[in-house]
Length: 261
Ligand code: NAP
Image (cartoon, rainbow, N blue to C red; front, side):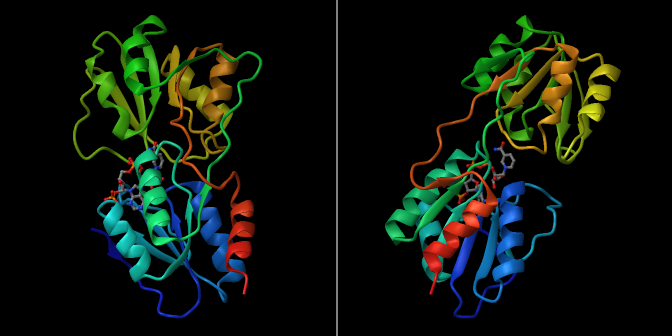
């Protein structure tokens, strides 16, 4: 269960942001900076990152313990509105939010960053799952830049005739299961020149990524385009149902509409 860094104790409407993304952090910043006198703002993190970036407002960390426990949290903490600003691939948390908010009758908005758009010169090969991408991977290259996140590496462990440059947000706690790889760490935003230099210095011939979208990690796509490299792209799961917006600014407007006195 999660640990709460501080519990809002005022009678201001309490907004819960399901976070772990740049957009969630931007939303928390906007709400706290501009409307902190009107709302209590809590960001919820899964607790995967050992050193998360500082966030304004309250922060809680760790899973809620499933739908029922999440609903209990929403009621106990008098949450007035939920913005699900989790990563497009965090499908389970989003699904739990749909169920818990519906049962607790709490308004919920999904803040979902726009997907990347294929540009002239791109050579994207799209797969529905990481498993399908991994099975096909050796057809497209020998030295892959793997940027799918630490939780998605397992399907690639069965490949023994490729070399991987694996970029993670922070160093892994356990050795990776990949046969032949090098790990580097880095948090976006990245520059196209920097990404290109990385591809060149490691003689990368294939980029593997999830279709995460967002500006912070888009530079690798430009670098791959410049070098004419194929990009194996794992498609997003379907978005959760309900109200949806694409930017932190639109989410602020939604909050104001929901909670205007
Ligand atoms: P997930 O598979 O959808 O969620 C698995 C479980 O982790 C959830 O059932 C929930 O546990 C807990 N959880 C997830 N997000 C949470 C949050 N914001 N606050 C509290 N508990 C949370 O999620 P995931 O893909 O592992 O992602 C975990 C976190 O990392 C998310 O916050 C997401 O925004 C961020 N992130 C994910 C990715 C990615 O590629 N998946 C990339 C960047 C950032 P309980 O059932 O116990 O409540």
